Length: 161
Image (cartoon, rainbow, N blue to C red; front, side, top):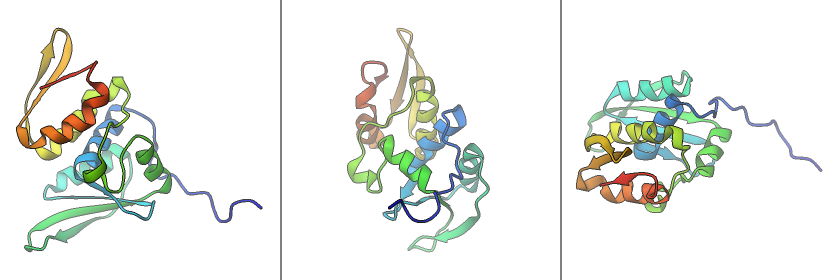
């Protein structure tokens, strides 16, 4: 007997580009994959950051107000897309990413743009440059552990200080 129901509609086009890599970086730092296998959420105090995510993914989802426990205003977008969720899992992003983060599979061509998205949210990089022709990104200490975990698959290609 075959599978029941409709095939999931892919709202997000999962084709690597600079915009797509940047969006993946945003999701890695501030995004959340729900345990339902379908929904991805991003909450930010910066509404432009939410807009950038939607623009990079070429989707037009509703942006909502979101209040933290301390009543601070932030902005929230939720994306319901089973195919995109499965894609994110396939490259190493999980629903419990803060506890399970490991190497993220990013094509070499888009790796620095991914890092830009990663760092745009956290605003913690101190320098981007080159060393012996290889990209070098310097971080403040509070992001080092997360970056070190993500970077371990790339340590032979990129020098992360």
